Amino acid sequence: MSRNSGLIAVILVCLIGIVGLISYFVFQGNQGSSTLPGSQFNQPPGKPAVPLNQSENQKELVDSDGDGMSDWFESNIAGYNPNVPNDRYVIYCQYLPELDKEYDIIFNLFWHIWVEENKVPPKNIISLRKEKATYSNFKKAIEEIAVTVDENDIIFISLSGHANKNAIACCNDSTISYSEIDKWLDEIRAKVVIAEISGCQSEGAAEIMKDGPCPRIVLTGGFSMEGFYNKETADKYPWLPTYKDYGYDNPDPALDYYDIFFSFADKIGGNGDGYVSLGEFIKVFKEDAENRWQSEEWKNITDYPWWDVARDEYGVADKTYLIEHSLKENIFWETFHS
Image (cartoon, rainbow, N blue to C red; front, side, top):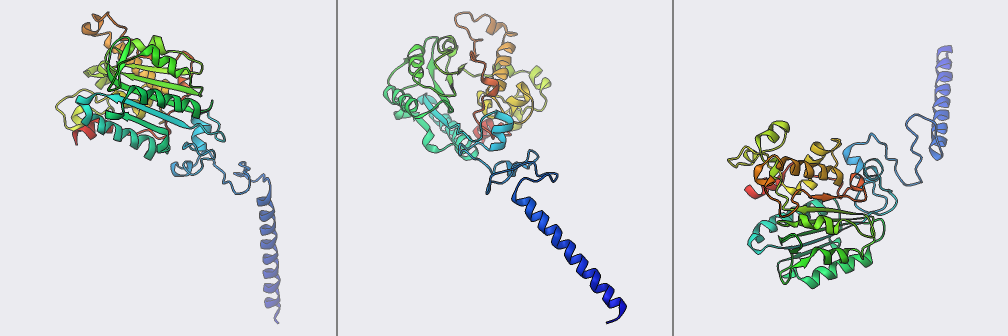
C-alpha cells in the first residue's frame, strides 16, 4: 500500500468514527429532553409536537380531547384546555312555514358549518323544524341536553319564528313565553349557554333571559342588520361584499345575522386574527343597533327595546368561541342567488 493510500484510509476511518459519534448523540438526545434549538416541545411518547408556527394543515392534526377543536386553537385562541373536551350541543327550533324553502337552505348552511367544517358530531345537533317543531319536542330537547352536558360544554340554542315582546312562536303548536324558556334553560349546567332568539320584537327576551345558574349569552331581535345597509358602511368597510357582488341590483353591504359564523365579525368588531368570538360578533351586532339610531324611522319606535340586541352579563363573550373554522366569504347571499 502506498503512503497516499494509507493516508486516505486513515481519513476514511476518522470520518466514519465522527459520523458514528454524531449519530449516537443525536439518538440519545431524541430519547429524552434535548437542549437543541427547536426541541422545546417535550411531548409524551407517540404524541407529535405542535409548534406555534405550524401551517394551517398542521394545526388541524392534533385534537387531544376529541372535541372537534384543535389543540393549537384551544391553547392559543380560545383559552380552552386542550386536554378537556368542550363538547358543543346545538338545538334549532324554527317554525316559519312561509319561509320553509329559505330555511332549508339556511339549515344546510348551518350543517356545513357545524359538522363538515367544525367536526361537531351530528348526534349533538337537534333540528326541530316543520312537523318536528313542537312544544313537547323542544322541551324534551332541552331536558336531554341538561342531563348530558357538563361544566366544560358549550350550548347553542337558536329559535326562529314570529315573536313579540314576551314570547316566540318557534313551534307549530304553541307560542312559548321567554320566561318559560328561561326556566327550562336554568336546568342546564354548562360552560356557557348561548340563546339566539330571532323574531320581530324578540329584543324583549334579552332582559328576561339574561342570566341563569351558569354563564349565559343572549342574542335577540330580527337580526336585520339594517344599520349596516347604507353607503356610509360601504365606504367605512370597503372590503365588505355588497349585494352587487352576488348579482343583485343593490350597492349596500350584504351582511346578515349569520355573520356569527363569518370572519367579517372578526374584522369589524375584533382583533383581526381570523377567529370569531361571541364578543366580536356582539360588537358588530351593537354597532348595527347604534347605526339604526341615526334613522328617524327607528328612533320613533318606542314600544319595545329594539336596541337591546345582546346580553353578556357574565363577561364571557370575548373568550367564547362556537367554532374554530369560520367561513371566509359571505356565502349566505351567494347561496340564495344561485
